[in-house]
Length: 256
Image 1 (cartoon, rainbow, N blue to C red):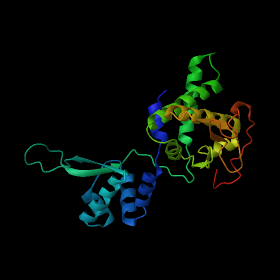
Image 2: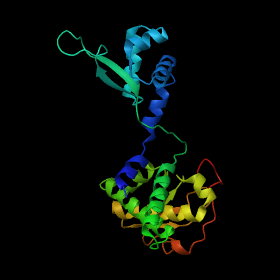
Image 3: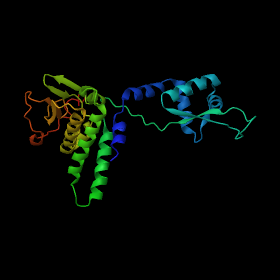
Image 4: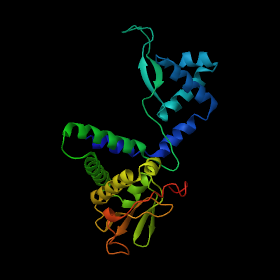
């Protein structure tokens, strides 16, 4: 299971994505991006400037801004195809980057869920009569959560939860999660998704070394169905496996 890929893919800090999308709000920049995107071959500054009726310096400025935001990538090549002395300087060429940009408010982590489910299906097919898919999903979610926690070790639990879109809120001895990163899926497949979420967060708590907290299923209107309780705190004897999980994800769209 490629946990490192999943961790990096799911830890999508949306500020960078918002900045990239905002860069396209500038009309000239958007026209240049669209022009490069439509071309199969890399585009040079002179070509772009001529096609859009811009000066070369204006085209160069905005193309480089698009590179800075990760929307385009730049490379150098001699357009004449000649090499050696007298062949001229390489030209700077631009093409669309492979970066995928997705912004959602509130934060969502559907890619993480998708990776877990695909990995579970692949492993279940290979197992041929071994663990059930639900058991595999539970284990993989816990393993991924633990790797996320280990990766964040040395930081704080709240920061790790916030990074993945859970919107943690400390209330006495309880950390409530103001957002469900798997909202739409949880509304349709509550038991499966909330159980996976519990395993994921249980792994995060273990991996980050927050031994004084435990993850429990404890649904409440307007919150994620999982909350983190401090050991010995009020309600810390709640057993997640015994809690019925009605879907609360659609009570308040601004919080769920």
